[in-house]
Length: 116
Ligand code: AMP
Image (cartoon, rainbow, N blue to C red):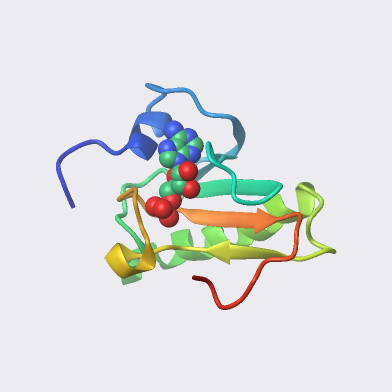
């Protein structure tokens, strides 16, 4: 991982603002600044992990907590019944632009498959 602080770490550290909708000891969720759907929230661990490929066995409970929290946030945002997508872009071909693990929670409109 690069030594440079990512924009998401700056949000965790309170150095730049974000529209935060949820946080606990392990994670933080906020609205994406460039929403790709009527609901587009990012859920990130407070721990610095670069992406899914950077998770280790030690992160098992963190990874589970992130998925459970994504489901709870979707429910609270009212998109559970209509459906939604949870996406973790990983690396260059995955389209990852911020090197801090994040789950996109997208909903509020029909989402196409396969992705582009
Ligand atoms: P990815 O391309 O999967 O790495 O996703 C990064 C996401 O972070 C993009 O959807 C961006 O719109 C979003 N993003 C970048 N900077 C910010 C920010 N300061 N606040 C909220 N979302 C951001």
